[in-house]
Each structure stands twice: as structure tokens, then as C-alpha cells.
Length: 262
Image (cartoon, rainbow, N blue to C red):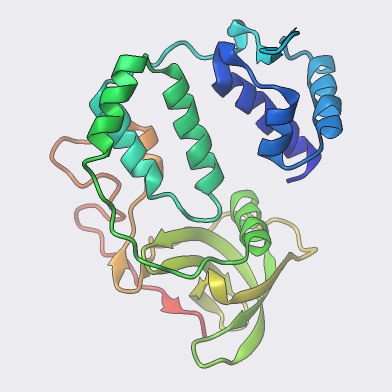
């Protein structure tokens, strides 16, 4: 994590901690840096205008002013358990840390009695574990930033037969599934849309080419499965009752299958 990202994450960590705050040592252990580095970061955050408050003594630490904190979200125990179950499935290397951070914020905002009920509910649920190879964290982050910023990539890819090729690709989506994670992209080598298993991408770097304008592409089918769109969960007002949430095709639309990388 670079320093800019850590400063942002530091503010979010203090926001999630609420009035209890965090000590410099707790923050240093969380971000895996020295206490001195955290103290310099906190100084920078304060100089940037974040309303930090310090408490001295054995229970001392750093807190963020309430004006920078969200009001209680008033989750019901069932709602909190549902969110916990959903976020517990977000074990992909790209989102695992953010999922944990979101859960901490929910827990910090809930009254103790409601939290205990939510925990009791969640304890009755089990998730099937389907082992899948994680991509290299640094490579996955490079891919994600290219997808987010609409930037071309040069990748080294090893196909199912063990043949390694170098490709220049235009990333479209990251697909996260039970059998692994994938990058869908337009491949200049093949002149067509392709699907690449992210754990088979051994190198990824941005090309010097300028960002390209977005193309209209069909929603992917990967390993024979349709995709769901998590963005739809952020627009609940658009969801119709009794429908599949975020299914990647609507009535009258046939989804074009992508060919696997090769």
C-alpha cells in the first residue's frame, strides 16, 4: 500500500473506530508499519484538515471528530447478518480487505444487543468453500486499476496447455466466481474478445498507449455461467420485485459467450 492510499485508509479506520479511537500502536500493527510512520501519517492527516482528537493516558489514542462520522445506520440484526454473509463471500484478493473494513464499520455502528442477535443469526449459517487459485496480489491490483481507468495492458499469459504468450489487451471487466477470477478483454493478438484466468497472468503492466474510449461489449459468459452485476445493488430503487438481482441479461437479450484466452 502506497502512502496516499494508507492516509485515506487511516481516516477510514478512525472513522470506523468511532469514539473508541485507536492508539498509534494499534494503527501501526493494522497497517504493518512502524509507530513512527503512523505518527507521521497522522500528522499529515491533521495538517490536511481532518479533525483529529488525541487522548492522553492509558486509554489514550486518536479519534476522528463526530462531524466526520456517519450517523448510526440502524441495521436490524437480520440485515446485519445478511450483509455479513454477503461480505464473507468476498474473499477475492482485490476486495477482502475492503470487505473486512465494511464489516468493522457495521459492527461499530450497532448497539450491543442488536449486534449479539446478529452474531447469533450468522452463527447458524455456513458457506461452502470452493478452493480456487488466487492471482498474485500485485498483478491483480495492476489489472484492477487498468479496468477502472480504461487503460491498455501488456500481459504475459500461460494458457491451459502451458503455452505462454505476450498480449496487449484492452481490459473490460473483472469476473469473480467460485472457480477463480478472470479478466475479460479485447486481445490485439487474436483480434477478438477473450477471457483470461487471472491466476495464469504472470506479468501485467500498463502500456504507454493512451486510454481508449469505452466500447459497447456484450456481458460475458464465463465457464458457461452468466454474470451478475454487483453495481445493481447500489441502485435498489431500480430493482423490480421478484426478479433476479443484477442478472447480466434482460428480456429479449442474448448474451454473447466470450472465448477463453488462447
